[in-house]
Image 1 (tube, one colour):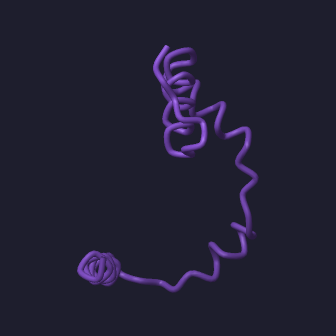
Image 2: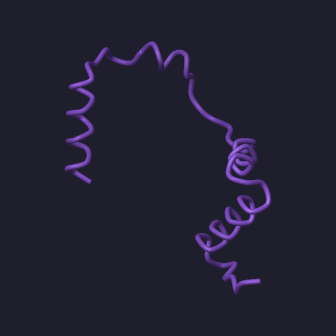
Length: 69
């Protein structure tokens, strides 16, 4: 067993994900984690309120976002 600092949230998270992946495999780990995802918002309403954008407009927004990051 590796030494784990349980006061370090990142270490605890990484160790937990490694254990889940080892025991359940990647797909099982994801299915397990999805059980705790509550979601938010109203997907149906939001889907129909999105502006119609061309792929070029979306790419331009992505490039601008990455330049600022």
